[in-house]
Length: 478
Image (cartoon, helix red, strand yellow):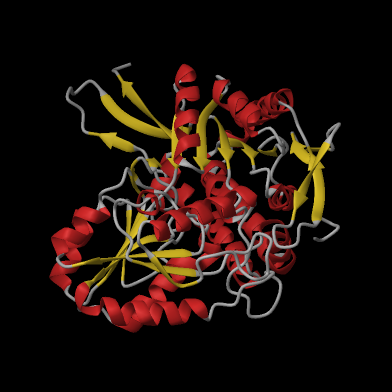
């Protein structure tokens, strides 16, 4: 961790050390990375007030002015790519190469939304009466709040902040208590980039429930964006009902992968490795249920097991490491429970299947075969380095099983049949579908799910819409 990065919260352009602090733990080693300010719900309300005070001046600035600041912020982040990546690896655990990629990915959102704000057009509507004129304006929705996750502590914050600030909203960020240091580092760079006081605020706390309730119940906060579990998203949805807030919820996934007989096997195996084991399987778009057609099941499974067994596990700042630790004891206990239940019910671990020999929070990359719909691992979001394989015979059977869950964030299809590609893409209940690819996320495209995977979209031009109101203006004869 660079000593130049702060540990105090950031409210109204001031650094708030807090009366008490809480530790940030490196999941790979158990060491304390730093101690950050432990704020109260009253502090969160102060941050909301600061954002409200800054809103009129910020929203009145032109989109070009706001864009210039966002571009400067992005440039400063990119200039600090290496220390930011090392900070992320220390507090989150992912391999350093992935952390470097995440820093650049986060900057892509700031740059994208900086330009997209310049295209937040209104309309001139043909009148129904000769004496009237109709038009629409796009205006900032108001103060926004963002609750960001621990698995992508820079990219998810930048995706929300880029859209909110570009639209003219001011923002209060509550980062995950596991990874607050990256958010505070971005706050320091935002200040250096010229983001005015109160426009971007970061509140750190070990009481996420209290902070979340303060954000949800505040009538001043008009937009709440949350990335996290479906269970917590439903709770926030209920808590926001009293103030009829706009919600952007990016919730849990249980991504299916459909590998058909005609797929390029090498491409499919590499795509599944990328989609499954990135961040030790701790992403909401991770390949969860891997459906493989009978004709290639044996050869695909063998190749996947060989590639999985070869993945290096270890502390993320060591050369060659591909899989780091899980985030905490609860996470690894969940993975152990899901795998044990599956094996007890007839599944077989071809590789892995237990904690890694390194101990601690490391779990061995695992390939399970013989998984069925009756097993808990079929319905649950694994959030760990476990690939669950299910054999299928027909296209219709694969689609039926893929859609047999309550969520629908991402899905993956491997086929060389163009007709099949379109049929399956249209049939899957997923907000994101990648074809012959394991890494579909980009700033220019919308990201979000169907069913219980959430509301709204992040990224693309749709991401800006979450923070804009449409105002209709009717002009009569003077």
